[in-house]
Length: 328
Image 1 (tube, helix red, strand yellow):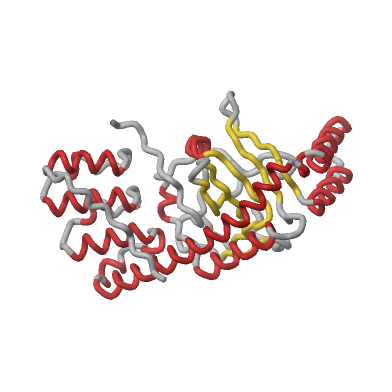
Image 2: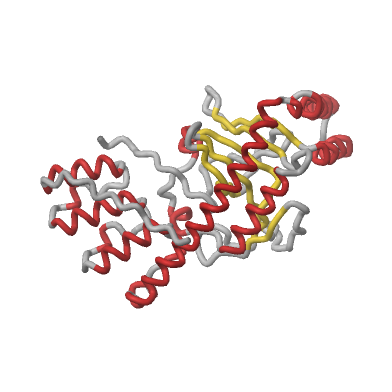
């Protein structure tokens, strides 16, 4: 009953895992912030891109690269500086593996705002354009945890321009030993001659373009839904909104906060970001019934487990699940 429940991570919300899940095309690990762009719910695979700070460790500005978009610094949470999001290097990782290296209860994740409308538009239009090029102008890297619990990667695809850049870098890097240089050349040749021709991977990239178009539409609906809920909260409960960072909540969470405030409930029992919208609803329904919600208001429980406990305590077996409104 107390086993930790794994929740789906939100798209378009930067996060920082315990261990880095971003790699270069030569399969070397380096630490930057991932941003989920799509979840394949049938295969339980997350697809994500990476973001880097626009300021280096010496506080000098970095130059924006061709396939990057600029995201202004956030008020709190991650992205304390302006950042560049790379729309050409795409990663995928299984649901289970990602949950091994990241905790969705991380305070930095919970306090980080979702992307703005302009950032959503810039991100998806660039990703889709790169994927729909005659020869996709992207790289695709499979990130996984091996049997020794190490985070590893395999580059499945890299466009020819990227490979030319990497071949030149390997040729000029004076720090490489002869053995290391040859190993990297062999890897790049394998990508160029073999992996890039894998029909399964090419089909996956084609499908990903279609999936990202659908995800783009969903992201716009979610954004406008969030704005609609924020407006309702601001108009009806201005004092509450002054003390709460609404930008870090999704549409469903905002809906549950508003419903609780409208009925005079003590929403402090679930207004902390640890609960997803479905869990929030179970706590709200319990508060409305007058039962002791502390017996099940635990983020480690799934909403189904919380519902069962609520129904057991209240004797209410009706399914009250909300279908959160979509803003057209």
